[in-house]
Length: 166
Image 1 (tube, rainbow, N blue to C red):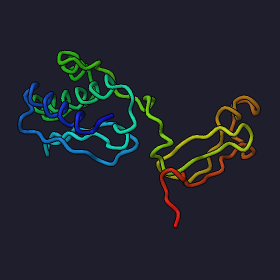
Image 2 (image 1 turned 30 degrees about the horizontal axis):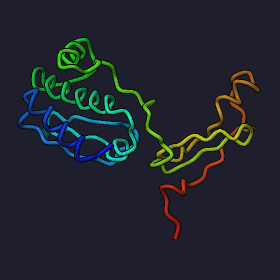
Image 3 (image 1 turned 60 degrees about the vertical axis):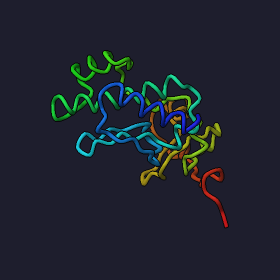
């Protein structure tokens, strides 16, 4: 998506809903799309996720989601995803749902690690390499009665699209 257009939309929506004392910033998050800090009055969106998002409505919904947190914080001094927040979110045009990581973003473009199954060759993208062994859930389920086995333990490699080798 066009970052300047998204930034302008975010600022316009923040003003429209009365968050004139809030600022908008980009961040480098890869595990969440947006955030709202009611104490510092800052709403952020993930630059890498926004750049690779293809669904404009999802971006606008995320902006509205974070604005709802700002309004909720102003009203109550805290914010979470309870019924009060959900009512407020829906009243400003947000879906009222917690945003999911299952968006239309191609994570291969910005996640640092690739975990590959030695059996089915499925690739899963991660921001960080896990400290504990992980195995392919599909293969463990299909071939080992849904139980972990090192036979399907992921092989880890740095993502060449993200990590530039010298």
